[in-house]
Length: 545
Ligand code: NAD
Image 1 (cartoon, rainbow, N blue to C red):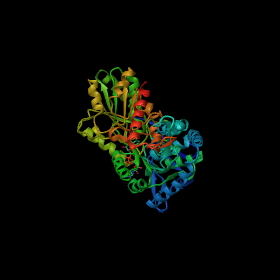
Image 2: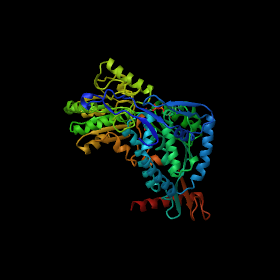
Image 3: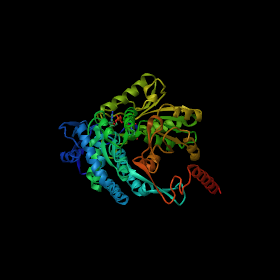
Image 4: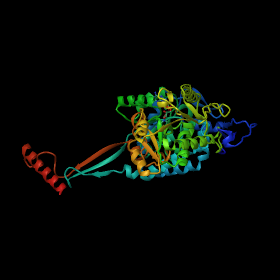
């Protein structure tokens, strides 16, 4: 815990005490933390809100009130865009090198201040500390990547002109202007910030609307941007329900970057289309793992725990379906179940919990409903399967289900919780077809000792990212790799070249010397057409020579 916060935490507890070791039954497993009012005030001061109304948010760790969040109106959104536009006009003139220097400073800041960042993320989301660490890590990686590669992506480049030597053509990358970023609660620090870094690097300003449940982590991100050296007005933050603020944002933005559910993504896409502005949509998934018959079982079981239960499964790329080859099914299931039962459970700011709480009563209700429905229809619970109010109000055990069938809700619908269904397969082609079943296509994993074959099979998996012998980290943490969904899992990509070019317009500038594109020297139109035809033939011959 950082010095900025006070409180007492509970030690992590094993899912199955017989596997994970004894715990002290006298010890109250519910943690209790207090967020200093000055910290809350410093953060919430960044919200552009004049309505005078606030909404109280609670920590999922213990249900205690955390902060009162001022709420923005449509007029506040308007003012946010006005300020952002003014700031962007100046920012667009700042050199790439200077922008990159500021991004590098942000990289250092998030690493230096990681304890404070993780505390806030955990208090707002209830996640385990090791999963909170992924957030400053992802921001540091993103900042470093775009700082280092800015020139590669954004420098003006020459392309071939129509008349060699006489037509000079340059392609500029021009900032779109003000980007609206609407982000979810599950990775409240990095999801609020990571897409904005390339937007700023490309010369844009941002108006951000983070999820209402996790405003403080997003606001700390905004504060760190300013501390790193970005002008304060370049990053505006508004607060309120997406249903109310979404439309005013889309109505004013030059581009929209959305991360959240597929249902909301479709609403955003329709509104963006109406205005003919671009949008990128990072949406849901029902992500599969394939464990092939030659897989390293221990490695696959370890990866399966991370794939299924990171951030209590509230992760867009986490696994909810596991297809395991007949030949290794029993061994794999035994190791996966044993590892899951050995997990240390608890809602605490310390490092000792392997999995934290769900974020809200809504999430707990969805997870409980999915598991109860599956069990009522005949699924078997191999591990977990219960809410744990003794650990925190919204805690649900990491759960493995077997015998899930298409009539069960969790067969094809995203649970977005710590619940994975495990299926046996006899034929690899059939397993790939089952993995491709449904409308989603975000992330897939393949465990095999034959990595070349794994990569070949990856091409048949209809997902935007596929990890061989890893859950999701190999692609997600490789910022040079574009990340996003096929089919109903999204549109466009974050990260990599695509992740920054989406925030730019290409502008071609042609400069013509001597010749003009029309008859010259008293030539008729017909003679001009003949000269041009002959020239085209000669150029083609030269090109082929
Ligand atoms: P959600 O769509 O309900 O909310 C996400 C954001 O959209 C919030 O800020 C919310 O206020 C806003 N919003 C809600 N309705 C809106 C509207 N009509 N117009 C504009 N904005 C609106 O999603 P959620 O349930 O909070 O988040 C979980 C979902 O997000 C899951 O499906 C998960 O898979 C997905 N997700 C995807 C990624 C990814 O990178 N692909 C990452 C994280 C989460």
